Length: 392
Image 1 (cartoon, rainbow, N blue to C red):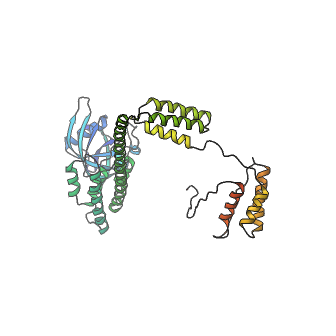
Image 2: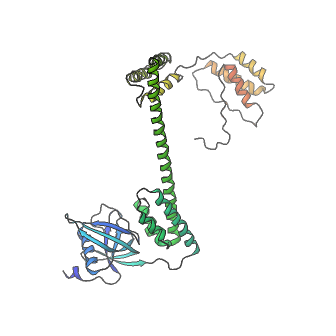
Image 3: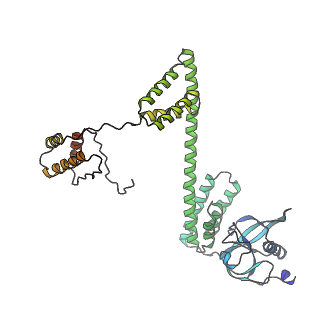
């Protein structure tokens, strides 16, 4: 057909809509196309030795994208290698050349065609752009040293790249960012702004990689420590066997069973604890779970399952304690006695919380200590100085 063979006018290019691919200028990227219009665009570019436009779709589920389904900015690319697989898919290696902005789609071709405006990089650099480029190159080399399996040739390319814009695009293709974030970088035309955005993403990614390495190192240390403890337990077991002291483990388990019986747990908790104790008895001390399970059972027996016995409130004794500990403060002491009287008359009621307000040294803490002594309870002091968020 004539419409399939006639050349595109100047300023109009064949477009390959991509579902989940963002190509940056100066970057090599393999793509696979199978839709009829995309295949026709690739064949046209190959036959006429012209670049094609790589544009990401807004919605990957759309099979026949129109103008509103495409992002406004894409990348002109040359096809450097092309093969057709047995299943009919066309595989091409494309090299990005420059950004472009879609002005309008042009009808009458067997592929998506668009009139575009090519976006050129600035030829003169500001001092800020040069400084940002130096920082970006250092960050790019740092992230390459943290990423596993990066070819040495890639690191050499990054080191040899001096143009800040080209370096920003190369780094943007390297980072493991979400597709919308990469598309936003492609659409950022202002060089200084693009450099700052890539620097911010690289810095954040480097922090994540360093933290991941630290976690991995700590995990390895913990595993090595567990292995060392396992070997030491095996050696201790052998020594105890030679000394005839193998029965000590059974004695410890008997003490643990007695502690469970005396802990005063609720029936459900005690049943679970006894179940885990039976499992502990059935496994050997060399088992990886043995130490963890035993620690859990000991922790269960140490929890305060029984509520402390409440002593009746003696108002006369409370008044005597307050009078003995504090001189004056008659209104405050009277209010405390009234508070205790309400507690005595209605022990199940929800009493308000006493709040003492005043500068340091007027007796707020000592009043709390006196109330605790009068009620026969333990006094606990929690200092919240400097705390601004109640969630802390």
